Structure formats: structure tokens, C-alpha cells
Image 1 (cartoon, rainbow, N blue to C red):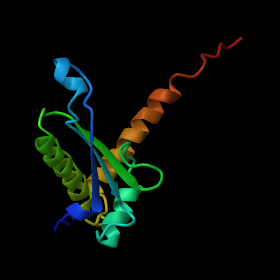
Image 2: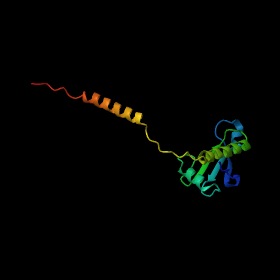
Image 3: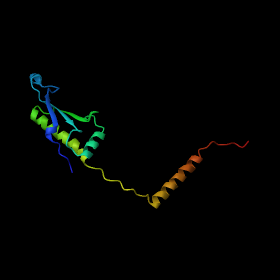
Length: 134
């Protein structure tokens, strides 16, 4: 069960890419800067809460996801890459963790634990100071 990100809610802006690119790097803006406001989005509330609770450096204090895509030399390719990465982030919190069922330890595991505690207690008791009869 995954929630689709509406591309209309995503703010994309073209910026100049960093790194090598020859003379072309200063002329063409082919990197993409993506901004997505979690609170104002149409995502289900439980996904919004889980996204905001996540400790991810791409999510600001104001609840805005900020991503930069500059892998490709094509602006379109970088837009698709940024949207794909945003969708992956949303999908990662859409899967609810399985509820934990409480279980009891078996009798034999309890017995083993107590036996090992008794053994280690005896070992430690032998480590005391040696007294001399005088």
C-alpha cells in the first residue's frame, strides 16, 4: 500500500550543476532542486506523521523535503530522478511495521539462564581477597 506523490505539489527549479562540465557548465542549468511541503501535501495523515518523525537530513525543521538531483546532464532526466527519489522516501514510510506479539521464554531457556548466572556467580566469588590465618 503506497501513496503516490502528486507532481503538482512538488516545486522543481533548475539550478546550475556543480562539478566538471567544461565550458558548458556555466551556461546550462541542468541540475534540479526539489522542494516538497509534507504538511500541505495530499498524502494520508499517517504517512505525513511518519515522514515528519523520521530523522532524515533531507527534511527541514519546517517539514519540507529538499532534494538536489544532478546525476545526469539532462534536465528532464534529473527531474525524473528527483521525483523517483521522493517517491522512494514516501514508500519507505508507507509500509507499517508488523505488530510485535509478546512471547514468554521457554522453561529450558529460563533454566539455562539461571544455571549460567549461578556459574558466573561462583566464578566471581572465587575472585575475592585471599585471607591469611595469623
